[in-house]
View 1: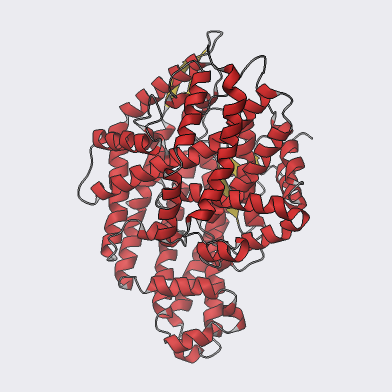
View 2: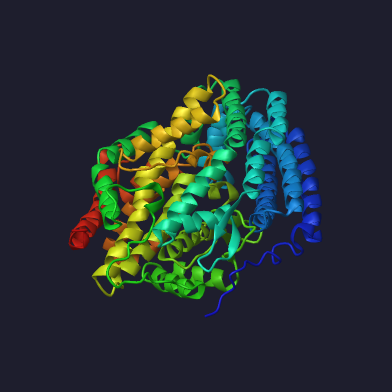
Length: 604
């Protein structure tokens, strides 16, 4: 099959950032907002009891508005991602966030009114057919409403966020869009690489000299702009911390944990078990460095391919990658395979390697059309086949929930990363099984291990950094040199002192630290990876009966706590080390294979 490497956005709103259809949708969204706020103001709770018909109608209005914002923001963000120089898209995002503030103000008023329902009446309400299926989410809303300030004060915070909190996050994207890294191709052609292009070459090019050259240039350019990024990070997180303080919340991890529906003891147990098992991962990195002729692993070599003997790394065209993913998804879930095939056929994926795109990759949902769109810069490596599968896993997760009430689709980031990482594991093991010789198996084991290294070492260092940074930022603004020192210290701890060189300005180059809507955009990745390992092991045992159970688990991801989800569907206790150790042991088996297979290739 031949698939488009560019996504179709015109089927959402025709005309890009100049779309008249989008303009009409924004006008209707404003009208819906006005009606929604009036409905809340007019809602008379006592008269609405005991059937609460008006309450249910307001919830449906809220759902339409939420879907409208998601549809429009996803569309405009997609335009901006594909062309960072589209200034109109930036303007549209600003307009949408201003409107979103009005919606948040309405939600605050709605939550305040919900609090007026007595506890006895509330329990009776949750037994009514309409409310019973969304009882968990409604209880969360009522709980959170109890922590709100006065309505007027909350409205002020929302209003100031547009040109404060949200603006600093957008400012980061503006700075990144200006980054260009000079590079000379081997035939002498001089080019300018975008941040996304430079990162892909730096981390995956088989030539160690190119990796080293690009890493030095990469560090230099982020270093030159470090004061700008420090200013951005200080004010972004300063706003967040002040908001916590205003709500009498002084534990900066409380909100991330609440958002992920996760207990502190679960998070602590996950990191503790990982910390107790780091030496094999350091040994793996050292062995890989030895294969490169070095004593210890350097930062830019972590994801470099291991090419031994006569082996040449397999390349996958975009079409080949699509067919490979669909074929191997089908072995676990025909529904996953059919969904992925449809996504390729309908051009939901922006994959072209070109200048002007933002770095990274993501999957975004379009609830009004019940579709998704996937963004990435595809480079034909096995690793990027896995990334493509990862994003399709996100899209599949959304697809199995479209028929649920909107509130029951609001799953958190940690369980969101479960479906995506599970999809990656399918592809990684599939490539391993097709290895034709020892050298290829070594290469593919290494490719698979890159995910584990990222989850157990890199992301742990991000978590350590962010935790230490927040502790200091509660007291004062930090200079860029201080932030850099925190980053190096966190990387040393996270990597168990296993590297020869580190990435001092990682804090500036990593988008995740600058995202305004989700704090601590790190530990959910590791959780999702570990959780998916458990699901994958479960799938191998269940065989053909797995698909329906897997979909049932995904459909529950927004309707209970993470600990309840694990107990119901996997019968495990996440606050105990057993589950985490079992997942780590699976990865350690891959390390053992890698160490055994590579011992004959070490330099004499």
